[in-house]
Image 1 (tube, rainbow, N blue to C red):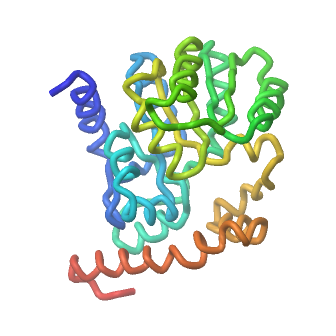
Image 2 (image 1 turned 30 degrees about the vertical axis):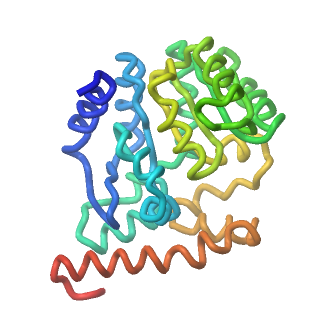
Length: 270
Protein backbone atom coordinates (compact mmCIF):
# COMPACT_ATOMS: atom_id res chain seq x y z
CA UNK A 1 0.00 0.00 0.00
CA UNK A 2 1.35 3.45 -0.94
CA UNK A 3 1.82 6.11 1.77
CA UNK A 4 -1.05 8.14 0.32
CA UNK A 5 -3.36 5.11 0.25
CA UNK A 6 -2.34 4.16 3.77
CA UNK A 7 -3.14 7.66 5.01
CA UNK A 8 -6.57 7.51 3.38
CA UNK A 9 -7.21 4.10 4.90
CA UNK A 10 -6.25 5.34 8.36
CA UNK A 11 -8.56 8.35 8.00
CA UNK A 12 -11.39 6.12 6.82
CA UNK A 13 -10.88 3.75 9.75
CA UNK A 14 -10.81 6.64 12.20
CA UNK A 15 -14.14 7.92 10.92
CA UNK A 16 -15.89 4.60 10.28
CA UNK A 17 -17.22 4.22 13.84
CA UNK A 18 -19.48 7.22 13.27
CA UNK A 19 -20.51 6.37 9.72
CA UNK A 20 -24.14 5.90 8.72
CA UNK A 21 -25.01 4.23 5.42
CA UNK A 22 -28.16 5.41 3.69
CA UNK A 23 -29.35 5.79 0.11
CA UNK A 24 -26.26 3.88 -0.96
CA UNK A 25 -23.78 6.42 0.43
CA UNK A 26 -21.69 6.89 3.58
CA UNK A 27 -22.21 9.93 5.81
CA UNK A 28 -21.02 11.01 9.25
CA UNK A 29 -23.73 12.65 11.38
CA UNK A 30 -21.57 15.37 12.89
CA UNK A 31 -22.63 18.49 14.73
CA UNK A 32 -20.55 21.59 14.07
CA UNK A 33 -18.61 21.02 17.31
CA UNK A 34 -17.59 17.51 16.25
CA UNK A 35 -16.83 18.60 12.71
CA UNK A 36 -14.60 21.37 14.07
CA UNK A 37 -12.61 18.76 16.02
CA UNK A 38 -12.06 16.76 12.82
CA UNK A 39 -10.84 19.87 11.01
CA UNK A 40 -8.49 20.90 13.83
CA UNK A 41 -7.00 17.40 13.89
CA UNK A 42 -6.46 17.45 10.11
CA UNK A 43 -4.73 20.83 10.23
CA UNK A 44 -2.58 20.16 13.28
CA UNK A 45 -1.39 16.82 11.90
CA UNK A 46 -1.20 18.17 8.33
CA UNK A 47 -3.13 15.13 7.12
CA UNK A 48 -4.28 16.55 3.77
CA UNK A 49 -7.77 15.31 4.69
CA UNK A 50 -10.82 15.70 2.50
CA UNK A 51 -13.79 17.03 4.48
CA UNK A 52 -16.68 16.26 2.12
CA UNK A 53 -20.43 16.67 2.35
CA UNK A 54 -23.52 14.99 0.94
CA UNK A 55 -26.97 16.28 0.03
CA UNK A 56 -29.66 14.79 -2.18
CA UNK A 57 -28.08 16.25 -5.33
CA UNK A 58 -24.71 14.68 -4.57
CA UNK A 59 -26.41 11.36 -3.75
CA UNK A 60 -27.99 11.41 -7.20
CA UNK A 61 -24.67 12.24 -8.88
CA UNK A 62 -22.83 9.63 -6.77
CA UNK A 63 -24.94 6.89 -8.35
CA UNK A 64 -24.35 8.23 -11.87
CA UNK A 65 -20.69 9.31 -11.88
CA UNK A 66 -17.73 7.02 -11.13
CA UNK A 67 -15.38 10.00 -10.76
CA UNK A 68 -17.54 11.45 -8.01
CA UNK A 69 -17.65 8.10 -6.22
CA UNK A 70 -13.85 8.03 -6.20
CA UNK A 71 -13.81 11.42 -4.49
CA UNK A 72 -16.10 10.25 -1.69
CA UNK A 73 -14.05 7.10 -1.21
CA UNK A 74 -11.05 9.39 -0.56
CA UNK A 75 -12.87 11.53 2.02
CA UNK A 76 -11.87 11.34 5.67
CA UNK A 77 -15.39 12.37 6.72
CA UNK A 78 -18.60 13.20 4.85
CA UNK A 79 -20.85 15.49 6.84
CA UNK A 80 -24.55 15.97 6.08
CA UNK A 81 -25.37 19.05 3.98
CA UNK A 82 -29.10 18.76 3.46
CA UNK A 83 -32.16 18.16 5.62
CA UNK A 84 -33.40 15.70 2.99
CA UNK A 85 -30.72 13.22 4.12
CA UNK A 86 -31.74 13.67 7.76
CA UNK A 87 -35.37 13.09 6.78
CA UNK A 88 -34.72 9.92 4.77
CA UNK A 89 -32.27 8.65 7.37
CA UNK A 90 -34.78 8.99 10.20
CA UNK A 91 -37.46 7.24 8.15
CA UNK A 92 -35.02 4.40 7.59
CA UNK A 93 -34.26 4.02 11.28
CA UNK A 94 -31.04 6.06 11.59
CA UNK A 95 -30.59 8.16 14.72
CA UNK A 96 -30.24 11.58 13.06
CA UNK A 97 -31.36 15.08 13.98
CA UNK A 98 -31.32 18.60 12.55
CA UNK A 99 -28.19 19.57 14.51
CA UNK A 100 -26.25 17.02 12.44
CA UNK A 101 -26.97 18.91 9.23
CA UNK A 102 -24.10 21.38 8.91
CA UNK A 103 -23.79 23.26 5.63
CA UNK A 104 -20.89 25.51 4.50
CA UNK A 105 -23.08 28.62 4.77
CA UNK A 106 -23.52 27.80 8.46
CA UNK A 107 -19.97 26.76 9.35
CA UNK A 108 -17.88 29.16 7.27
CA UNK A 109 -18.00 32.08 9.72
CA UNK A 110 -17.15 30.11 12.89
CA UNK A 111 -14.48 28.24 10.92
CA UNK A 112 -12.86 31.46 9.72
CA UNK A 113 -13.06 32.89 13.23
CA UNK A 114 -11.08 29.83 14.36
CA UNK A 115 -8.66 30.28 11.45
CA UNK A 116 -8.00 33.90 12.42
CA UNK A 117 -7.49 32.98 16.08
CA UNK A 118 -5.20 30.05 15.26
CA UNK A 119 -3.30 31.94 12.55
CA UNK A 120 -4.34 29.42 9.89
CA UNK A 121 -3.89 30.15 6.21
CA UNK A 122 -7.00 29.81 4.01
CA UNK A 123 -7.13 29.46 0.22
CA UNK A 124 -10.34 29.57 -1.82
CA UNK A 125 -10.36 28.21 -5.38
CA UNK A 126 -13.47 28.79 -7.44
CA UNK A 127 -16.17 31.16 -8.71
CA UNK A 128 -15.97 33.43 -11.73
CA UNK A 129 -13.10 35.91 -12.10
CA UNK A 130 -13.62 38.78 -9.68
CA UNK A 131 -16.26 37.05 -7.55
CA UNK A 132 -13.82 35.25 -5.25
CA UNK A 133 -11.82 38.45 -4.69
CA UNK A 134 -15.01 40.36 -3.87
CA UNK A 135 -16.11 37.68 -1.42
CA UNK A 136 -12.64 37.62 0.15
CA UNK A 137 -12.79 41.38 0.70
CA UNK A 138 -16.09 40.95 2.57
CA UNK A 139 -14.63 38.19 4.73
CA UNK A 140 -11.47 40.17 5.48
CA UNK A 141 -13.61 43.09 6.65
CA UNK A 142 -15.20 40.70 9.15
CA UNK A 143 -11.93 38.93 10.01
CA UNK A 144 -9.19 41.58 9.51
CA UNK A 145 -6.31 39.32 10.61
CA UNK A 146 -7.39 36.38 8.45
CA UNK A 147 -4.77 35.07 6.01
CA UNK A 148 -6.92 34.46 2.95
CA UNK A 149 -5.99 34.13 -0.72
CA UNK A 150 -8.17 33.25 -3.72
CA UNK A 151 -8.02 32.12 -7.34
CA UNK A 152 -10.96 31.89 -9.73
CA UNK A 153 -12.19 28.53 -10.99
CA UNK A 154 -12.25 29.28 -14.71
CA UNK A 155 -9.19 27.40 -15.93
CA UNK A 156 -8.33 24.23 -17.80
CA UNK A 157 -8.82 21.75 -14.94
CA UNK A 158 -7.25 18.76 -16.69
CA UNK A 159 -4.58 17.50 -14.33
CA UNK A 160 -1.65 17.78 -16.76
CA UNK A 161 -2.65 21.10 -18.32
CA UNK A 162 -0.34 24.09 -17.91
CA UNK A 163 -3.12 26.12 -16.28
CA UNK A 164 -3.86 23.40 -13.77
CA UNK A 165 -0.21 23.02 -12.84
CA UNK A 166 0.00 26.78 -12.32
CA UNK A 167 -3.04 26.70 -10.02
CA UNK A 168 -1.57 23.86 -7.95
CA UNK A 169 1.76 25.72 -7.69
CA UNK A 170 -0.03 28.88 -6.55
CA UNK A 171 -1.86 26.97 -3.84
CA UNK A 172 1.30 25.20 -2.69
CA UNK A 173 3.29 28.43 -2.47
CA UNK A 174 0.65 29.69 -0.06
CA UNK A 175 0.59 26.31 1.79
CA UNK A 176 -2.95 26.67 3.15
CA UNK A 177 -4.15 25.00 6.30
CA UNK A 178 -7.67 25.11 4.82
CA UNK A 179 -8.32 24.73 1.10
CA UNK A 180 -11.88 25.50 -0.02
CA UNK A 181 -12.79 24.44 -3.56
CA UNK A 182 -15.97 25.89 -5.02
CA UNK A 183 -16.25 25.01 -8.70
CA UNK A 184 -19.63 23.31 -8.78
CA UNK A 185 -20.48 19.65 -8.50
CA UNK A 186 -19.05 17.31 -9.75
CA UNK A 187 -16.18 19.39 -11.24
CA UNK A 188 -14.80 20.46 -7.86
CA UNK A 189 -14.86 16.93 -6.45
CA UNK A 190 -13.10 15.46 -9.47
CA UNK A 191 -10.48 18.21 -9.31
CA UNK A 192 -9.81 17.52 -5.63
CA UNK A 193 -9.58 13.76 -6.23
CA UNK A 194 -7.19 14.13 -9.17
CA UNK A 195 -4.92 16.70 -7.51
CA UNK A 196 -5.05 15.76 -3.85
CA UNK A 197 -1.66 14.08 -3.65
CA UNK A 198 0.01 17.11 -5.28
CA UNK A 199 -1.53 19.64 -2.86
CA UNK A 200 0.18 21.06 0.22
CA UNK A 201 -2.86 21.58 2.44
CA UNK A 202 -4.25 20.44 5.76
CA UNK A 203 -8.01 20.11 5.28
CA UNK A 204 -9.64 20.24 1.83
CA UNK A 205 -13.33 21.06 1.36
CA UNK A 206 -15.84 20.94 -1.50
CA UNK A 207 -17.97 24.04 -0.93
CA UNK A 208 -20.01 24.59 -4.11
CA UNK A 209 -21.30 28.15 -4.51
CA UNK A 210 -20.24 29.29 -1.04
CA UNK A 211 -18.22 32.31 -2.17
CA UNK A 212 -20.93 33.31 -4.64
CA UNK A 213 -23.30 33.66 -1.69
CA UNK A 214 -20.78 35.60 0.38
CA UNK A 215 -20.03 37.96 -2.52
CA UNK A 216 -23.74 38.56 -3.15
CA UNK A 217 -23.53 36.95 -6.58
CA UNK A 218 -26.26 34.49 -5.56
CA UNK A 219 -29.15 35.24 -3.19
CA UNK A 220 -28.60 33.64 0.22
CA UNK A 221 -31.48 31.54 1.61
CA UNK A 222 -32.67 32.57 5.09
CA UNK A 223 -30.97 30.24 7.54
CA UNK A 224 -34.30 29.27 9.13
CA UNK A 225 -35.35 27.72 5.81
CA UNK A 226 -32.34 25.41 5.94
CA UNK A 227 -33.19 24.32 9.48
CA UNK A 228 -36.73 23.30 8.49
CA UNK A 229 -35.76 21.72 5.17
CA UNK A 230 -37.07 24.43 2.81
CA UNK A 231 -33.81 25.90 1.54
CA UNK A 232 -34.30 23.98 -1.72
CA UNK A 233 -37.54 25.89 -2.36
CA UNK A 234 -35.79 29.26 -2.01
CA UNK A 235 -33.07 28.20 -4.41
CA UNK A 236 -35.53 26.77 -6.94
CA UNK A 237 -37.56 29.99 -6.93
CA UNK A 238 -34.37 32.07 -7.23
CA UNK A 239 -32.97 30.17 -10.24
CA UNK A 240 -35.63 27.81 -11.69
CA UNK A 241 -34.03 27.54 -15.14
CA UNK A 242 -30.80 26.11 -13.73
CA UNK A 243 -32.14 24.16 -10.75
CA UNK A 244 -35.48 22.69 -11.83
CA UNK A 245 -34.01 19.31 -12.63
CA UNK A 246 -32.09 19.10 -9.36
CA UNK A 247 -35.15 19.75 -7.21
CA UNK A 248 -38.01 18.40 -9.32
CA UNK A 249 -36.52 15.38 -11.14
CA UNK A 250 -33.56 14.00 -9.18
CA UNK A 251 -35.56 13.45 -5.93
CA UNK A 252 -37.62 10.74 -7.68
CA UNK A 253 -34.44 8.70 -8.16
CA UNK A 254 -33.59 9.23 -4.50
CA UNK A 255 -37.08 8.09 -3.52
CA UNK A 256 -36.49 4.87 -5.44
CA UNK A 257 -33.24 4.34 -3.51
CA UNK A 258 -35.12 4.86 -0.26
CA UNK A 259 -37.87 2.36 -1.02
CA UNK A 260 -35.34 -0.17 -2.33
CA UNK A 261 -33.55 0.06 1.03
CA UNK A 262 -36.80 -0.46 2.91
CA UNK A 263 -37.57 -3.55 0.85
CA UNK A 264 -34.09 -5.00 1.42
CA UNK A 265 -34.55 -4.53 5.16
CA UNK A 266 -37.98 -6.12 5.04
CA UNK A 267 -39.73 -3.03 6.37
CA UNK A 268 -43.12 -1.87 5.18
CA UNK A 269 -43.04 1.29 3.06
CA UNK A 270 -43.97 4.36 5.10
